[in-house]
Length: 466
Image 1 (cartoon, helix red, strand yellow):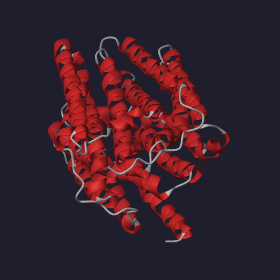
Image 2: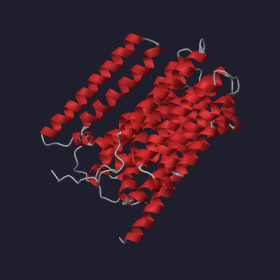
Image 3: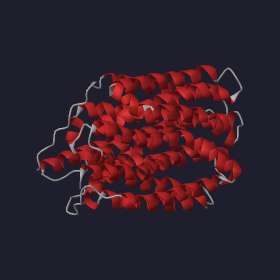
Image 4: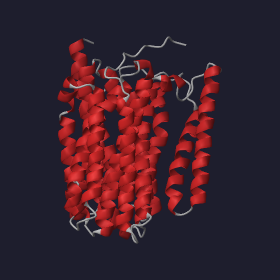
């Protein structure tokens, strides 16, 4: 294959890959504006819908690492298509769900599993097909922009569909996009053949997923029982310790673990992972808090809430489109630092403007800055992490990177959402303020990590074969 042919193929696969990231991110945020409609139709509560959203994000986070690892064994394109099919089935089940349990089966479980299988190949294929930093930055820019726009525009699109037809039609919309992605993916070719002989660490997959699930479920249980929260979080921490001990034991025995400990010895990548977790935690957390407050406290309907969220969509779209040109002028570190500053200021602006007025448009300035900030740092954060490792590690680091990002999303909805829901009926203003303060503190943690990222990302070193 000539270099020009390779470039043409790379550009051809970018659209389905970006669309896949868009629809998965859309699924994580569009339900925020359907809270009232869904809770009434399914005879549940705001907390019930919060649980469904959080479980969806959590299943993604818990299974993303195994999903990334399976790409080496079964092939990137095969896992991508399998994930799309499972996701599509889950969307259709969600569309006809008669109650919360079936919604959780379709949306939270099946769509979550589908996403965990299809997203790692998106980033692995991008890394393998775009070789130099400039073209890779543009490709990641397009994919990250699609993901960010999916999250930011999810409330608007979901609001329009819900108001015009029904919240159920939003899931049909997702299924139709999945069909389009499958058709567009026909020309995707896997850069490397799968290796069916590769060992898969089943115990590691179970322990890593179980630990993450227990911790997030513990956070969700905070409002009901502090004791249960401590038990679940403590149990989750112990399970994750068991996971890392099993990884070390496999490495000492010369076997292939789910994750190589070498992934955590790269300081630059570790800092990038922290920033990824923080930015998605802030974006999804603020989205859930703002949408819930507007609907439950201020009485806005789905379309009114979605229109207010256009501020975040505009901000994220503008900064994402500028990501390519900006990456040529500024270091990745500079863009990430600037993104955290803008996002944190956006949170604080929302804290300052909203309590003193009854208009929902008081959210707009904070949402705009949040969108601008997150859009500015999405691409460089991904580039920092993926570019820190050679091709042989792309399956593992892609799964870990997406797991960390989706864990941030689920933690954002779980933590900020739990703080808000705990007093949304009795003290809504106070609990809104506490939620935003928590998110702003996360922004400061992300900013601190970004400040230690080197201005020039060291070139990855290919490890010798075992």
